[in-house]
Amino acid sequence: MLLPTIKLGDYEVTRLIIGGNPFSGNSHISPKKNEEMEDYFTTENIKRTLFRCEECGINTMQTRGDKHIFRMIREYRNEGGKLHWIAQTASEYLSYEGNITQILKYNPIAIYHHGTKTDALFKNGEFDQLKKRLAILRNTGKLVGLGTHMPEVVEYAEENNWDIDFYMVCVYNLSKVDRVSSEITGKLNENERFDDEDKPIMYKTIRATSKPCLVFKILGAGRKCESTEMVREAFKEAFDNIKATDAIVVGMFPKTKDQVYENANLVREILQAKQNP
Image (cartoon, rainbow, N blue to C red; front, side, top):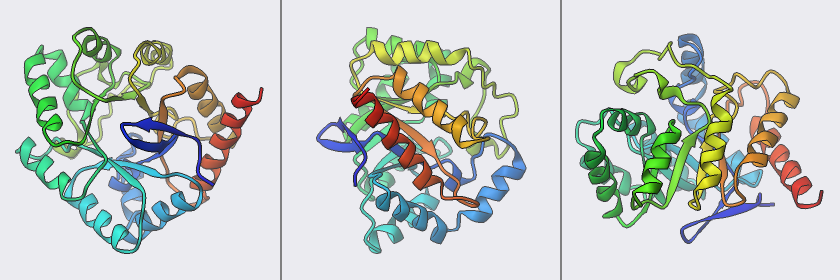
């Protein structure tokens, strides 16, 4: 049975979306964990995970728009895969427009501007450049999203009525310190800070916008996964603090247990309890 959904444009998107960082070996934990994810997530295992999402009632995936993912999506769809795809721009591409052209070949329902790049442009005061990049996305005819780790970005975009359809927001402000995407540097961002004090600020920002928000890193990139109860608490905290028109994006690593099934069940239970208190 399909999980509860929100509207993203004309699409029905489940309130639990599978995130793609683990597929690309981006653990945000350690180089060793990155390699463990890379070793596990062969194309076959990524496809298996996505089909498991379909079985468990998830209907949407969010991943990077790069050649590794393009090939996987092609195989997944050739084998009957049906998940909606929300694509992130890949900042390591020299040509932003070229990257978007490639993404469009694989028919996402939405494309959003990579959050780390958003934050760097914003902190440098390059607002016009950021608006131009969003306008390029608008010209694709796809839903347009703005990714960020900074509440200030959402507030500025709202105050200035930027032309976007949704926000892709991190509950932790990882851009408090300057950083470059690990896909560009090839190194783990070891100075990333997962401060719980950030969360109430971003949740308040999420509630203040009428636009849908896709909320990520609610598990602190695996830091709040020590037990099922810890995961449940993080999920409940998120759904208690976001709008009914928002969804959560969660990366999953089902190497040792069926995280897809467990996460889908937790979301179903939490949302049912909210509906029938």
